[in-house]
Amino acid sequence: MNSTVNIAVDAMGGDEAPGEIIKGVIEAVNQRKDIKIFLAGQEKVIKEELMKYSYTTEQIEVVNAEEVIETSEPPVMAVRKKKNSSIVTALQLVKQGRCDAFVSAGSTGAVLVGGQLIVGRIKGIERPPLAPLIPTKEGVALLIDCGANVDARSSHLVQFAKMGSLYMEHIIGIKNPKVAIVNIGAEEEKGNALVKETFPLLKNCPDINFIGSIEARDIPGGKADVIVCEAFVGNVILKLYEGVGAALLSKVKEGMMSTLRSKIGALLVKPALKKTLKTFDASEYGGAPLLGLNGLVVKTHGSSKAHEIANSIIQCVLFKEQKINDKIREKIILNDN
Image 1 (cartoon, rainbow, N blue to C red):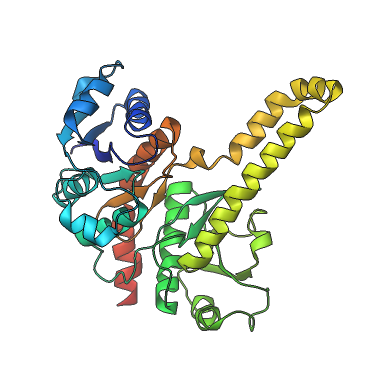
Image 2: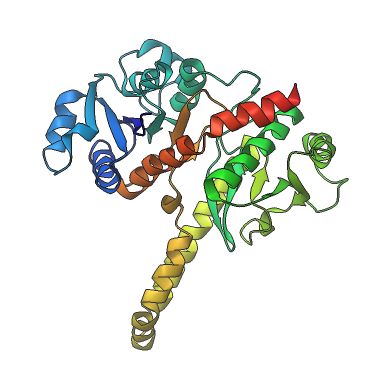
């Protein structure tokens, strides 16, 4: 049995491409000998970048793709017209079975559209959700959905909850993860039409540990392990999370540098503070998987640096080892039928 995990990486996608993407690939292959990377993009550019590093050459293969899908392009049109783009070429490797997973920091729209059109949904999955891990006081929580389905139905949210629960149990290692639906209050009768319709379905679902509603202020405290919502709400939560985190960090730094006494204090607390802040750094947890597809598709931030790219690649190994797609087919699709 082949134990190598083959991962297609979009070398041309993202604000820092191809430099940080390739640097992240090098970091990943130097950490793990059980992965092989297929770098899709402009061959000449990629090879020039690779010459800067030392690595096991058998672990990286360059797949030429001259076109690049820009973030400003309409996703559906771009995926259909730019067949020789780095995103489409890399996704085709997953569809063909040559690769187990795909990682990109490129156009979110193109990745979401390409994932569904090219890789395809698992039969029975209504809508694949985008599900990033977000830091909390207790560790991490899975925010599902944060960008793929702005207009979702109750049946979609129930599948999100089931897939999210499987992911947290088998990838993060949380037994019987707590599942909650985002709401404007804790009471069952509160919420918009979608939440009111979905709540009883989740409450009566035997496959998950549903604990009820969760208000946004309770998410950072780690009240739940799986945070269920449609993508409009999820994306607002994610962006606010990132913005508040950046603002707080900026204010902490400003305060520590304001006087001589605070600067001395900053030197004393720096090691402990750095360790604490690292747990709230989203880049430590890799990218967001698009769950429910026939292969793993992972979307990282457009501004991703090398470390986040490396972590996104490495998370693909655990996804394959734990056979998440097989578990989705067995425990969600078969049970529903």
